[in-house]
Image (cartoon, rainbow, N blue to C red; front, side, top):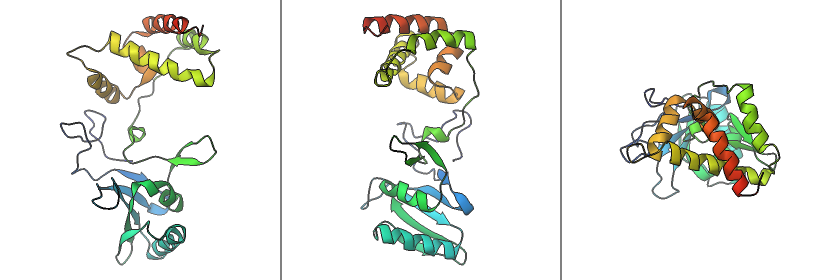
Length: 215
């Protein structure tokens, strides 16, 4: 969860395209009002530092105790007020802390465990509801129906090549394209369809798959 720039549908960024260091409103929503949010780059303890916020002294102390039983070095710079507990930790320990704070879960990994959404993830940005008509989507599905799971990544590469060849130019770079996707709240097939390039994309995909003997 995070506040975001509604004009670009993206997090505030510097001219270099990095997250604005003055922007500290990125957070992962957890149960009981708990939050995990971005603090900054760590000088000694890792590339990024996050903060766990727990609006309950008893619960906060119990969480810190439980974390220390796993690894006593995870929580540091612990602060307590009359009603809340905060501590910092390295981003590499996000899964451990998120589990104890009952953070919102994202997708399940192949091994059945959950992966928590980083506060930097574009998945936290709102998406535009968009549906490709079934009769048009069926063309694409027929092209990919017999592909093996390990071959599907090639379809993604084909889509990227299509975007670069058909949309990008010196005046409209791939970075401009990615920014437009974020602003529209669309990506992948939906973005291509919204740009009016669906039929051309399907023909392009078919030709590329034939070149690789996948059709």
